[in-house]
Image (cartoon, protein in one colour):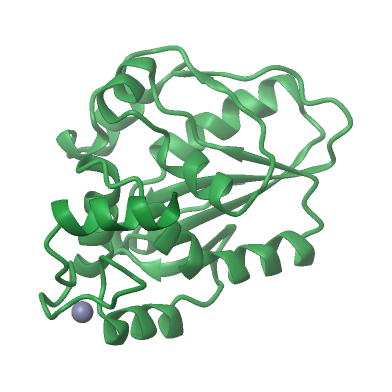
Length: 217
Ligand SMILES: [Zn+2]
């Protein structure tokens, strides 16, 4: 079955690296070995205030996440997980995490895209995670440039039940730009679970987040 999938992929996708357009590595499919290696070398666990992250959100990361999310290249999740898995495991052990919660996407977005990008990554790694829901249809955050508009857009967007028996949870998103989404999600969790400890992990952290000295607690 795997070889069939592989052949189908080869038929439909030009096997060029999405980052440098050189021929992609046969096992990586979407990337050449040099780009993969350099991403892996840079993508070590880093910390900025209360946020753990692997990469700065630059043009490369933008391209990778866009290809994965908006062009429905679900198979790229396999490659992405390969890049984050070891570091994510380190974080979970280091912080003694006992529950993982991906930021949920809205029903509409789920229908458009077909998958929740973070949940799919966790599935590749065989992690169990807690589902929560997004109860408000929000605009894409990238359409909203100012912080106040982003805050309003995401206000009361989430719903999460009481998390019983958990001491420290890890919330995961793919990108953190201004932090509006993550902050609102944390507020909702704290409303129902005031003693729970929260750790945040994102694949990519923006320059804006550093400039505004974003904090989650
Ligand atoms: Zn390349």
